Image 1 (tube, rainbow, N blue to C red):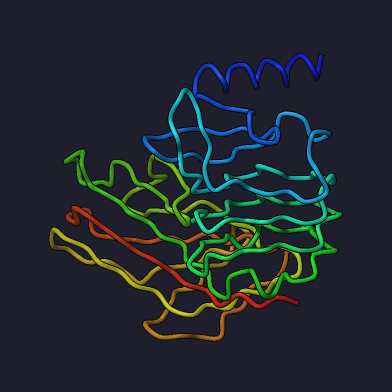
Image 2 (spheres, rainbow, N blue to C red; image 1 turned 180 degrees about the horizontal axis):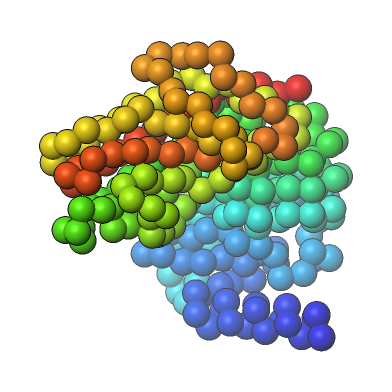
Length: 255
């Protein structure tokens, strides 16, 4: 039953999103002239060295491969080395989580965005400190479109990831929760806020494990979070605000 379900998911992906398994068994989604790696059809088809292609062909068109999506290779133990081309701009959350045999990752793009938990639980990865980001920023964009004195919806953007949500209460806007990965320690660095439409915006808050709030100052402060901590960004703003953009940045230290 489980295998039938997996096959159904893959077939739906091919039909709906234009996935392809023509390049070393990898699956892709396509958008305009770009492609994103979303997984692998059969891990047994992989080699010890996983080479992410810089481009793929699909239906007679050539697409530039620009990202490795969330969870694309999570818990895959087939390969011990990954080569990531210069075309890749982002490696998503938990993209290689739990790849126990992964030892080396080669990355040539110095401007690539790598989420801090992209390689979580990769205990044998030798060059983790060299490739993972030293900072991580959580961004929130909110709009007051309903005219009823409350923020009607907002978008949470974590390094180009995120989605569309409804506010929880009043005019307080929250980001998604993010859990500090094992082997990491996050220290608050700074925040930035910008808004239009009048009214006021309080400094952002950090909610820890559903309970304690830290109201952030304008400059850095000794606020540190440890592996397993669940944090969430919250902003309280006057409903007159029409557009709100907030970003909170953390230093990331790898143990």
